[in-house]
Amino acid sequence: MKKIIAIVVAFSIVASVMAQATVGTPDPNAIGVDTAQQKLQTVSIDKFEAAGFWGVYISPDEGIAAGRLFQGGPAGKENEPKPEERYVGIDPKIADQYVYGVRTDFFRRGHNQIQILAQKPLPIEGITKTISVWTVGRNYNHTLKVVVQDFFNNRFELTMGKLNFQGWKKLSVAVPPQNPDGRTGIIQRNYHYNNQMGIKIIGFKIECDPMEAFGSYYIYLDDLRAVTDLFAEDNRDPDDMADGW
Image 1: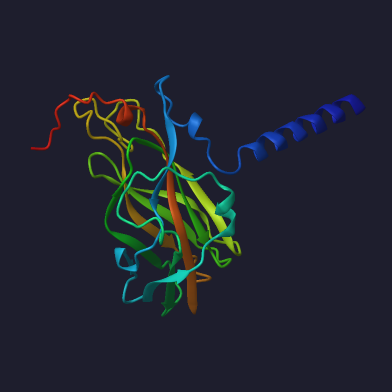
Image 2 (image 1 turned 90 degrees about the horizontal axis):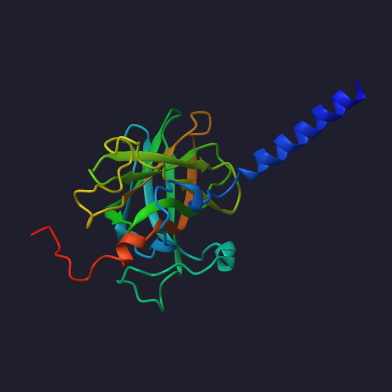
């Protein structure tokens, strides 16, 4: 009997350790690996330095929402490796000074939805493995989702996590690979168009818990990044012709 109890306890401990090991930031090396050749790179997508680039929307029946910039940022990201800057447009001397804050004043409780949308889709080079963003959730039981658009302009919502925490926290989500048939799911590559691949970020969506959708709600965002496979992008033949004319 004691031996059986010991085996059960040992199995429970192993199962608990395995469960804990799967919690946290997704491992990009284990997501959608369909080739032995990969070049994974963390790239910066947006640092929320331009308030006019983002818009906040909520149904007029549910409340009023507005967004603006605040100076500051999460101290935790200073310990992270610097991402590769593949997009030009913001002076690096003044970049990464602000965060984007959103305030929502609810009219009534309900399954309200807040949308934080970019003025134009943000493309991610290569085949995206994970998407992350630093967030202040203010310990509400709302859910943050990232809205992406695939190769064929189909939109998908990926759940980043609950906002029931205080202070800054990095939320990450894995981008699931397309289905084996190659025609469904989030399609990032098509063999007919090898010079166009990847996904675009449309924005974010907050699904509110009806029990906590009251009063004023605040959320802050900073440092939108992605881990992407740039092997095909960086090893394209330099003499290949570019379609799109």
